[in-house]
Image (cartoon, rainbow, N blue to C red; front, side):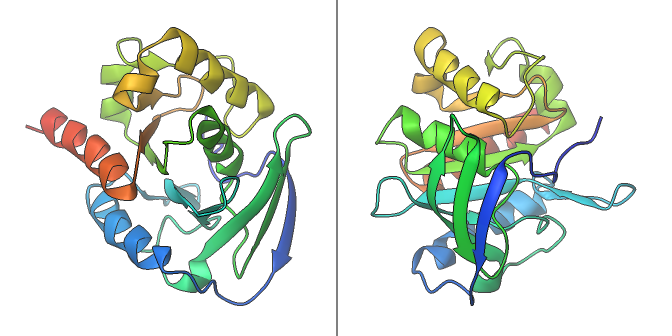
Length: 203
């Protein structure tokens, strides 16, 4: 089932002009190779984009994330990003500003940043090949838990404590068809981690 792109949290979005932040250049630099590899993109038959990335800002609970339904675009502008200013995982709320509403995966990104202050970037991609090949061997969420929910946030807490997710920075979302997450101390580390695994599978 394709449920990517549907926001499942209570979104408190204040529409503003395009973000003015130096991190957008870095986000675009690492988003493009993910797009070129087909890890970020668009399901034409469903009219739904997939894949997103984010970077933590100087304010610990804030992060910049690609906006909702931008997967079909090869390159993004500042108007395609949102700043998540705050969130409440237990109440399933995300507060964001920007010209575009924050990605439907914002709650998952928030939950991952909560795990460790050293996590500086999160990349969420789609790949049927990687998903099938890594499911069960890499850290894997419960298949009954849907993306973008408080339950998924709890799942990532469990993975952080009970699996090698903290060490590897890689996780498979079993209940989110083709979905994988990569983390890093910065965007380069998070993006290169998943790109290296993808290249290995494509050999």
